[in-house]
Image 1 (spheres, helix red, strand yellow):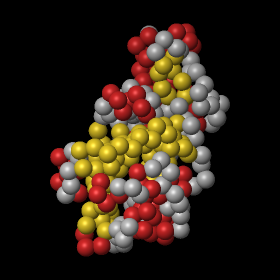
Image 2 (tube, rainbow, N blue to C red):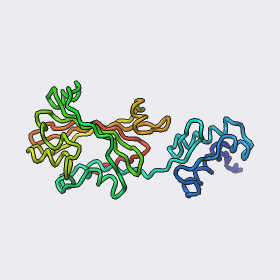
Image 3 (spheres, rainbow, N blue to C red):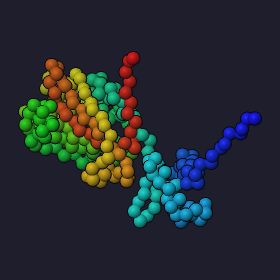
Image 4 (cartoon, rainbow, N blue to C red):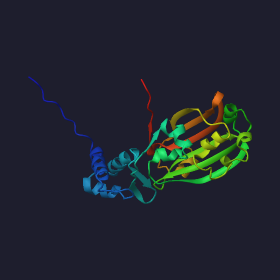
Length: 250
């Protein structure tokens, strides 16, 4: 005798979250809309407060909603940026006067804000890579569609870039890599290290990260001919805003 399969119904908080998710993904609830609060969910589903809180927590953990203290939980929809590891750094991109971010955003609105450029002592890690004790550092925040998504700090040997456009706010067409090319130090190879971690307090504030959102830390070194390192770039990405794509032959 064959037994009928047992079907286990998902917990009520999961079913509540599924319904809210459907409303978000269908467009019934749009970006910035307030989700039903705990009291409303308790009344509609006849559940305890802890269950209503669990349902909202599912959407928060998925990055579809963000809590605002004293106000409620709101839809947080954002089309992820597809960061193509090799295409964005190709010589064809910056040699033609295009910004790396043109490759990332593909027509979406982006701005570079909070630009700070300082000459300062190199950290131990940067000094070890660049072989210098003094660096020019370009610190920036990038926002796409009005939302902060990345912090970046590019370090260059001070003696190499002193007096060049690299130490100005506007580096000109093609950005810093085109300027390095004019100095005879065009990048010919890049190395990136990528890891995920929880953000530091200052990163949470600068990127406006909801509680529990991790960041992606990327450290990139640019090398000129002869294996000479010319830049160390430390980037912090909002993990909920990015898809990292890498293509390579088998």
